[in-house]
Length: 266
Image (cartoon, rainbow, N blue to C red):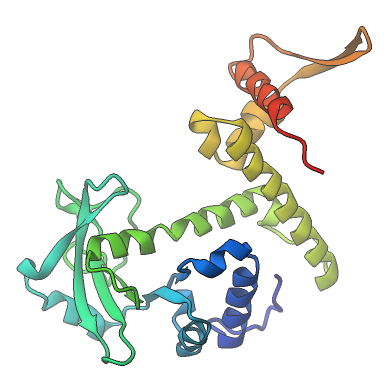
């Protein structure tokens, strides 16, 4: 959804609306399952958390870090930290659990320094700021989830970044710039971009494998979508002839084979 240029950041009403629309898109089966809403620090508002509690939805929300919180983290002794893990349970960095806020409204505050082991330095891709201390890059999130495994809680929260991957993909699909001068026209442009992105995501999920299954839109355009081919007719059949010397011709041919094998639904 587009918002006007003067819209405030961290507007509780907007955050609640987005969360409710996302919940409304869940299949009916989700009504019998635990639902957890994840957000970075942009969603750190009391109003959003209160609304999730009303709906019976769990939450895991990143918190902005000020100087006082950063200093408090540094006072946590080394034995209190727990090693963070990758999805395959290999070590990634360190996390600490800071307990609960109050008995009737439990919420846990976790802080972390995402440093790889070894070496004792920022993990690849980490962007340190001038306020980070001694090579530590802190991340803090609050959650109401009851699991005792703090590493699993942190991993689940960190995996929200898949949403950020989709945002990056949308920008590479046409959302980097809004081309029109009217809100309603740009809203149509947004819908077209999201439609194109949905088609790309489903194509990757159903038709591709290997590195192409997780490739960025720019890579897919170069390797597959812009691949040279010729459409011919033979024996009342429509045939697409791919350029044999193209390195990814086999991948595109396999994608068409998988597409034809998909069951048709009315």
